[in-house]
Image (cartoon, rainbow, N blue to C red; front, top):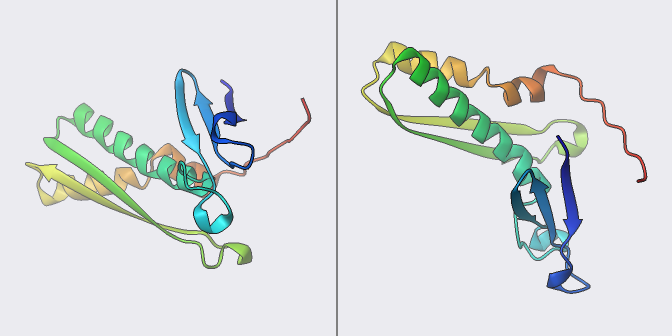
Length: 135
């Protein structure tokens, strides 16, 4: 699967807005105001953090369904602390909110499962190798 990002020329020659294309989905991306953009979409850091939240939510939902747990709603909030990013530390705190008829043991089990979602593991346990070439 390929993901592409291309400059959105409709926003004018000085715009930093781009369009992210994943399969049939298109998402605007941009730099924030304070980074010289126009905040016309999420930043790359926002998308990175959002991938963690989305993965945790989907992992918990699918696990709960498979186990017959009565989860009604799931919300994952990710808070970023990038103050030490240039020193090699990028902190994300995720808060899992669940509703439904769940006992304490089920809630603890779902919290444990959220900590093992594939993106969480990818971010913390896997070495990523990136090659950039001209096309």
